[in-house]
Length: 272
Image 1: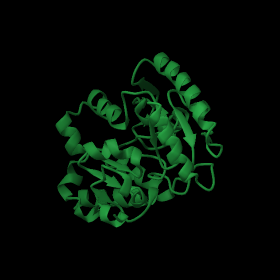
Image 2: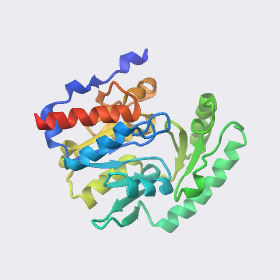
Image 3: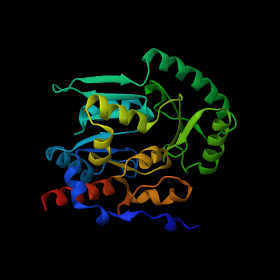
C-alpha cells in the first residue's frame, strides 16, 4: 500500500472550537521542533507566541536529560518530559528546575547500567551503529545513533538492530535519529498522563479535550493513539506505512516549520 494511502487530514479540518479549548501542546523535539538539525527562527517565535497566549508547551522527547535541562531553562516551554518518559523536568514560578522520575532515580540508574551492557553486546554485530554522543548525559536510557551523526543514515542496520534488541526482550523504539532502549513500564504517554494529572490537575476527560500532541516518528505512536487532537508534521509521511497509530491531522511543512504552521493556525482560530 502506498504511503499516500495513510495521509492524515489537513489542518483546515481542525475545528475552531478545539483550538479555543486548547490549553496544552505536547510535542516531540527532534524533527518536530527542529528541522535539519536546527531550531528554526519561526519555531522559536511560535513557542513564544503560544506562551504569550496562555498555551503551555511541553516537549516530550527521547533526547537526553542534559539536553532537556537546557531546553527547560532556555526555551519558552513549561517543562520537558525526557528520555522517552523516564523523567519530567518541571520549572517552578521562580524558574528553578525540578526532576520527577518514573521510579526511584537510583533504581532507574541501576537499570540503565544493565541495559548499557546488553546494548554494547548487540552493537558488536553492527559496526556502522554507535552509542549516541549524548549517552554520557543520559540518566535512565541508552541511545543508539543511526542517523544523527551517522551519515548516510544506516537504515537497514537500524531495522536489524532494533529487531535484535526486541528479540532479547528489551524495550526498544526508533525515533527519527536514534534507537532508544529503556526500562519496561513507561512510555511517552504514561509520563504525559501522570504529569498532566498530578502536576496540572487535568482529569482524563480534560486531557482529551485540552491537550494536543505533535510528532514525526513511530516512537510517537503511544501519543497519537490516545490523544484525539494529534498532529504529524509533514515529514511523518515517510513513516506512516509502518505505523499502527497515525496522527489525526498533518501539516504541509516539515519539522519546526510545520510546528510554526500549526501554531499560526491555532492562534488564528482562537482570535476568530
